[in-house]
Image 1 (cartoon, rainbow, N blue to C red):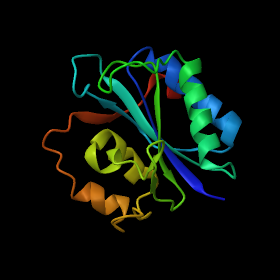
Image 2 (cartoon, rainbow, N blue to C red):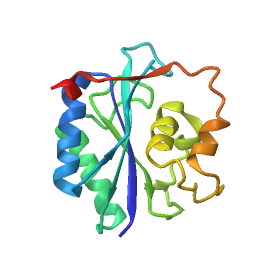
Image 3 (spheres, one colour):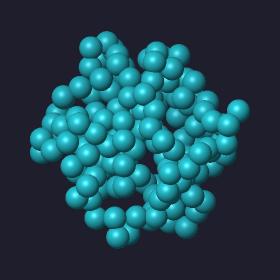
Image 4 (tube, one colour):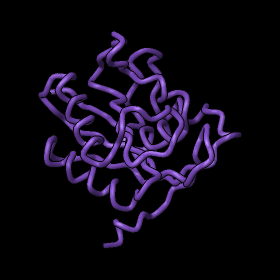
Length: 165
């Protein structure tokens, strides 16, 4: 059964959408492994700060079905598919890893290139899967994070309001 990792982000009604997303993921996939939540400045546009986290779960569903479920959850939370890459959003769920699969068929890219490009993806992933090795470069996520250029990183670990409830 493959272990999947997803990145979750929101900067519109994030206190509502992220907990609701987590409940939906748990309904579909069962027990979740959650990273801390990170507050991150918007990248590529002026907008409210994002909340970002990584989530791990095991599934026996095929990758296309997992991707379909993630899109359904996004759409149920008001996500529109016609928005620009760098823009405000209610919910963004990206499938980062699906076991040790490597694919880039134009529909699905695994592992996602964003893992090595953005601190808001890498730091939460390195937190919950520090010893897991990237299937292409064979470095652990902790090692990749250790060597990541953080000079432009504007994010901090936070205690989100819904975890106090």
